[in-house]
Image (cartoon, rainbow, N blue to C red; front, side):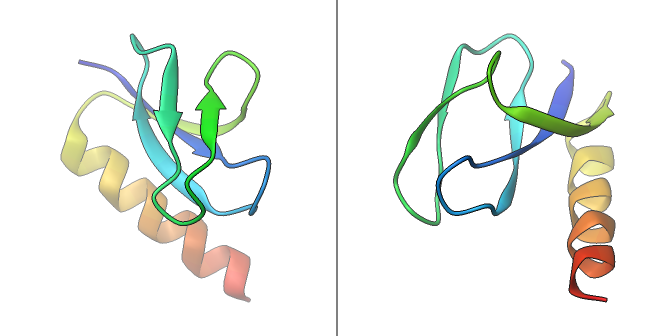
Length: 63
C-alpha cells in the first residue's frame, strides 16, 4: 500500500491518504478532498512511515 501526505485545500491542514483512493474526507473541516487535485507534500510506502512523515511535516510547519 502506498500513502501520500496531502494538504486540504479548504483548511490547509495536512493528512494521510492512500494513493489508490480518489477522495478523502478531511478529518479537521469535513471537506471532501479530490486526491488528484490536492497538493501532495510527501509519499510513504507504509502507514507507520506516512504517520512519521506527517508528524515531521507538522513540526516543520509550526516553526
